[in-house]
Length: 286
Image 1 (cartoon, rainbow, N blue to C red):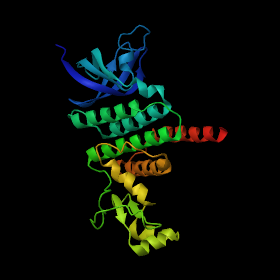
Image 2: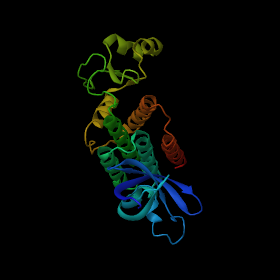
Image 3: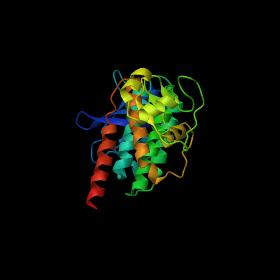
């Protein structure tokens, strides 16, 4: 007798299989990552066609197979269609999905990861579609927030509230010119600098300091403030236009951190770079 089971899942990856099928990789809270065949979905009149698209959440009825399970029935619960209507949102969604694909386990419940991904995809989708620099600042901020939370659920998020070397509380200092902290990928987060360190870094004597403290980057007071926001459940809704370059720096540093600690290259991040580059080129023409 064929074993049939139910699952709720969000489609994260789809590849063609045979003449008319798709092989879907789906994140479910009940069983973690599953790979199942969606039969006949590439046929023009398939009832499952739209339900097999990326970022669609379905209630599934699945039958066990010898090598691959098959979807018998799918009822859509949520469809993040807004992500595919904007290139920036789509790139951000694919970025987060790729991280989840490398984090999630098979044959193990992944309830927290499932709901966390849905939460961040929903936030990105709800951003109003605009083309100004403030909107792009918000997009990168929301993406960085999602990346940080995915790292946190894995237990490897960078330490941003206290110095990961001394354990001292960190407070951005906006009153002192050239005030900085270090960020170390190896050490796992922010490193508090002494006054002499700050003087050295402001004079661009970086090679000695990098060797001594294994510092990857130096961060300004505002950049530290943005990093500390990431640990919160919600971002400050007043995301400022002046923070655009700082948010880009935060995302790129998180990307390096992810790639180092998860030991793989995030391919979807290139889509974000391409998208932002196209925006910069468009602004030059205007």
